Image (cartoon, rainbow, N blue to C red):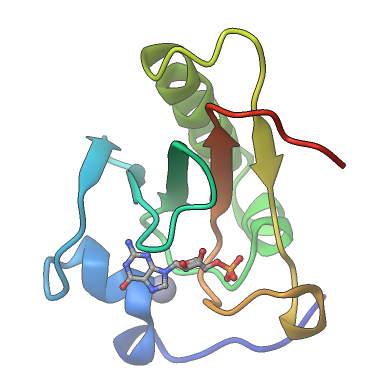
Length: 117
Ligand code: 5GP
Ligand code: ZN
């Protein structure tokens, strides 16, 4: 398990879920929230997060397969809504050395342009 967990009260994405910090929401249900990345890397750059605070997606898989499924299902629905039929990228940075900066599980849904390796 990669470390880097933080208390929920200090978590940026928990504060977005709680409405303390504004975000441009794309979709929401009981378990998942999706909102636009503040620093988009492509025409579509949406962060899809579980409402439960878990440090990363592997941690989410360990506690709730249902919520992990809900995150991916939401990403797939948004990809269709955003017209990304030709393809898109789902990115999961896990751990600070891999570029994770917010230690609340999230998928980056990125698309709308050519995405070279
Ligand atoms: P990570 O680097 O942890 O994989 O991704 C964190 C993402 O959160 C980054 O792409 C960053 O641009 C985004 N981000 C950081 N702060 C905010 C914020 O206050 N609002 C939104 N919408 N996105 C943020
Ligand atoms: Zn959190």
